[in-house]
Amino acid sequence: MATVNTDNSRAIARLPTKAISLEDRYDPPANFLEIDVVNPETHGFGNKRYTDYEIRMKTNLPVFRLKEASVRRRYSDFEWLRRELERDSKIVVPPLPGKAWQRQVPGFLRRDDGIFEDDFIEERRKGLEQFINKVAGHPLAQNERSLHVFLQETTIDFDKYIPGKVRNS
Image 1 (cartoon, rainbow, N blue to C red):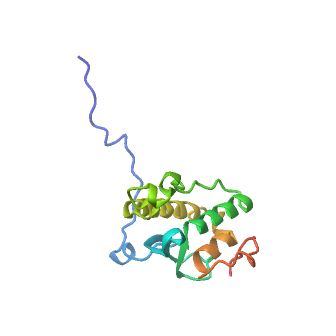
Image 2: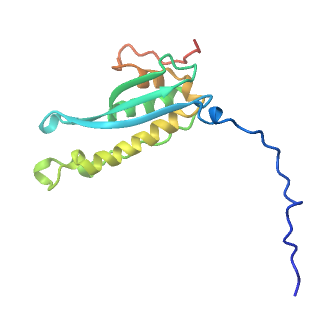
Image 3: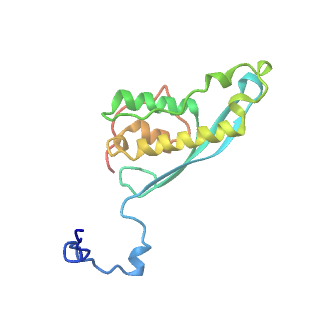
């Protein structure tokens, strides 16, 4: 039977590490961008109902004018952002969570609340959060005006919106 040398201590070379102070360990990271999709709210009655979501952003990236922002967005606003990014940026834009066509059947034909059920809203919220974090985490997307409008403007004025890039201030 062959013997195996188990003394690998000399074979594994480690890079020397610099001691990190407790203060440095708990300092904020050099660059960060945190985006949460929270607090879904359903508004309206009958076929005029819709759900919107609060988008909370915190960052220290110099490209963003505001370092903290909170806005409310509907699913259709996410669709607008995706279309704008596909048209103007050079990144592959991830898909949005599905439209759930089966859940949009009129209420009198359904036995549940369709797209306004809590489980569906929570699932969509998670998908929207994943989408916006993937998009906003891309360095090229961070320079797109559409992303800045989406994350920082209280309302999106589709008529006055002009596509383009954002410059560091």
